[in-house]
Length: 150
Image (cartoon, rainbow, N blue to C red; front, side, top):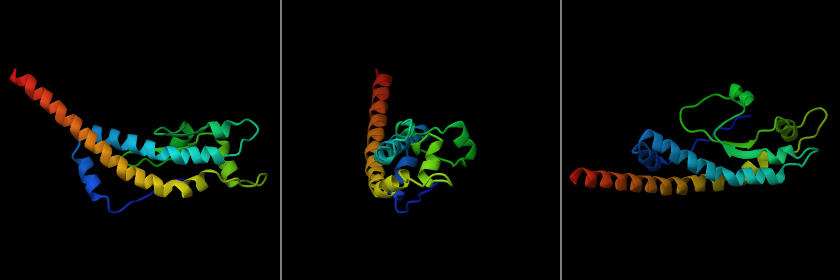
């Protein structure tokens, strides 16, 4: 299952990101999204059943890469994508259940409880990271200007 979130009203952040070099903007967005997703992953890990092997809890994380199977199923978007959740294939059966097993939701409750905080973390984190990036670029330009003069 794939969930897409659209947030309106962040035009200033978008404008500021577009003012950065594309690679810098992507790294800023990736860092902020990964940091904002970590509390959701931690909550999912805490709520996940231990199971016979304990692999489900250990497989929770935040990252930009999918497994080979997941990447075949995923639709690629333009922009930065960060994924939160387990990489254990048994997670789907555990989350939603099947004819032999009752559902034991762990990621959806974690998402529901943490999505508002994640959005706030993204907003504040983006402003902070954009400010840092602009400051770094200004210092770099200043160093290059001093170097060119003497």
